[in-house]
Length: 141
Image (cartoon, rainbow, N blue to C red; front, side, top):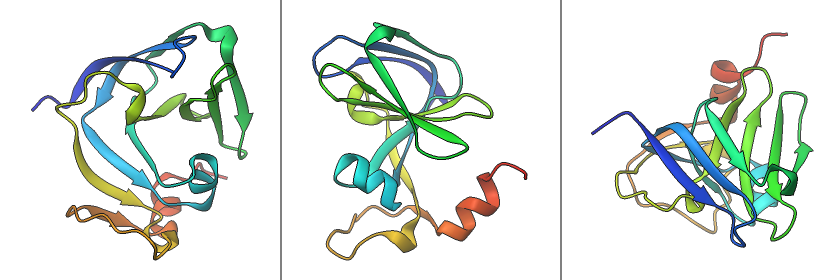
């Protein structure tokens, strides 16, 4: 199975289309409180790297959710488009916006210690706690 693949997708209303030129096939779920508050549940997303282009960019609203990241959504229909790390322009994008995802494998969960008890995924995944995520990914101070 290929590690990276070009993926095309769009928001619900079609005002924004996206081309992720180098998307991973490994799906992850984030259980942090911000992701759950943003979408009403865990964010299920693909790492799409920094090579991402948009059509309809004037319809994208951006929200700086922390010092190191921003979230983007369609201003017309509200579809969540990305979580972007500011330092390296890395886009983490909801899997649901992409049209072809047959090759995707759900293999990791982050902020597993923040997951509420009212849901559980049955997949066998690599799980990382909040402390482990910040130790591995937090930008240097």
